[in-house]
Image (cartoon, rainbow, N blue to C red; front, top):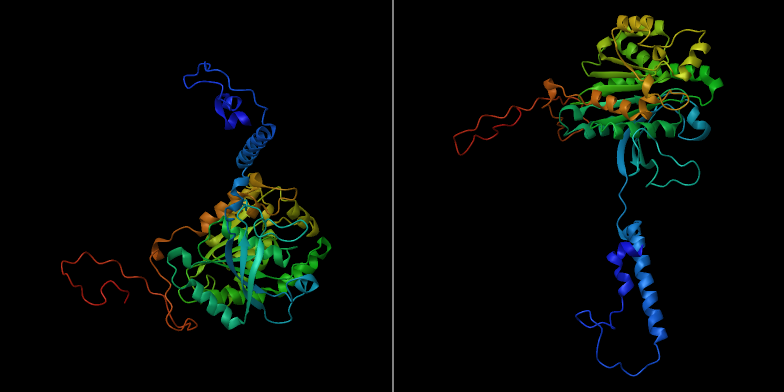
Length: 418
């Protein structure tokens, strides 16, 4: 340690009083002998040790204790929930009618690693190390969609898009909202994040009960999709649905298609089905009502959760467990007309059912897909008037920039949207 502080061994020559300025021994007579100043030398030694210790601490980063900590990032998410509550038994019970709405702010820790949802294994939450719910504002249905419209206002191009996340079986309320915040942050999503959460029972033996809950939740999700498509100046409604939530999503899209809106009035974006727990024949029927060009299927042949689901369903193949390397499965995917991404090599953990969000490469693929620029509306700006809740306001493209004018005083209103 001393060598790093005093290079070339200078710390061994701290007292040069016995040498002359030219480095030769002094020739003057020695002064009268004096008793050594023991106390002074000890003080000098202790001060030197203190200097070494302080310098050593700086080398391990303690000198930065006075620097301000990096603030956690914040992700805003809109939440529609058909759960009775947000914690305990109430969070696994369904509302009899309607849904609960809120706007929440989720904190993402500065040390967040892509693909992870950092939460305390025990003890209290630490905003510097964990995802936390920073704030929550309850809203009625009207205020919910008005607030959504105001968040979209002023955005341009793909930033006017909405990402709707529908979770799957065995997902708690906290897991759902933190997962959406993680995906939005990792994917660098520039639009508005929306969570649809439903009571997905938390035990394997409750799989049948969860399917019934998902069935009950179809109508509310169908209504949410319709209302999102009607937001003034919205870009596209992208959907990321996982596991049983993929079945729920396809059922809701099918309901909208039957009612006359198969593509949400032109607002339907990408429908990404991650590890979809859907019977292959059922999916064919659902897809008959939806344009398959919108649908992306993230599959993994080594997904153990879907293998178990197949067993519980009487050995009926699941869409998310198809293997593109298997000729029969590949032919089935090509026949469906959907795009497929094989995440088998990206599989993480023992079960491999959450690869779509746990593998950084998978999240980047999702982010690149939903952030793809659309030339037809790249310059379209969301503009709300003085009354943000007025749903009659329509989007208009910004006028192209006019050629440079030779007139020093351009006419009033030039270059503004008409």
